[in-house]
Image (tube, rainbow, N blue to C red):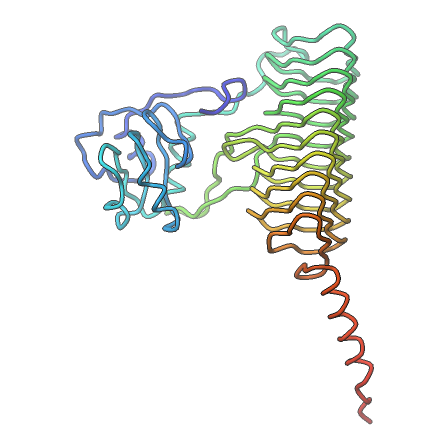
Length: 338
């Protein structure tokens, strides 16, 4: 279930309604009056949930589905277990997005006051001019909020934090002694899109951001909330200016990322990893603990723990040095044409 601090529950909805909204067809019209209360990913779906399957590689996961409902393509219906209501469509992910928008909505700021009366601020919180704090937000003792900071509904910020001017924080749980510099955006929707019958549609992002104690986020950097779970940055990790951490990334403790680094969605980064400036990491990869990624490296494969990789595409440093030296020798050995 999406965290109720950040998402409003709009359900339940009948499966017939969800089929109509999404353009899907119920495999068994008799279940149209059954209801779904929430959306869930395939691995976490159960009774009352509606999920989807679009990637044939995940067909084995469908067998573990117990109850609930699932959007899927007609050719995959035979793989579904008994007791699961099927909504058939050529665009399962886009159909699921329509259902998610019917069942859940991000909480927005309520009322006209800059600091909502329901917000909880401990003694010693310092608010600069223009700060906005949403309903049921919680801010710990000794935390400073710079001019123009926006704290969204339900956000929890620990003690002795420093939030720079015009930073925007939503859908987030933040520990103690965290520094978020000017213009940073924490918890906005990550990039998720799917093709639908009328074109590309946005996929709802129903997760959170967790920043553990001692984290630093540089100016104008972005940390996206999870698509469904959490985007997590571990204790004492330091993020430079103009860095992007995408949805569902898990960054370990004591990591550093220099400016213009981009870490794509669902990548898992171990403790003590260092990223040079402008490093880029593809999605769904694993970067082992203690690894180093060179400046401007483009990582498309898992990186083993403790190794240093660089180049495009990124590969182990010694290999890159040998290849670069070989190319240099070959280029220098060619006689000029005249």
